[in-house]
Length: 69
Image (cartoon, rainbow, N blue to C red; front, side):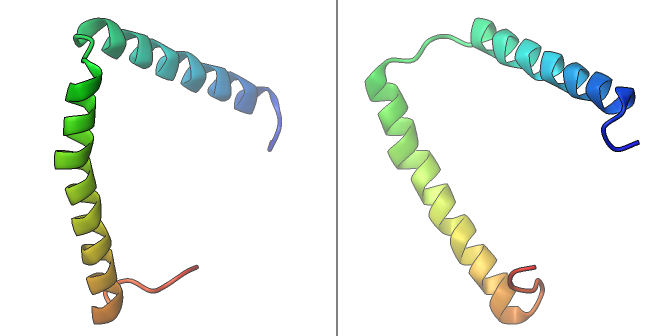
């Protein structure tokens, strides 16, 4: 069923799993300073995002994927 007991159990299981993963990752990795996070964002994440947008546009232009749904 769409909203039966199975979906509630599945939702709770996924919620507990992701909460555990977030807590585990936060406890595992060190806390970074603000300047380190800014450097990571500007020198790593922004260039990766720009390249990803260009790759997606190239895929649309070549007809590998279609636009929209």
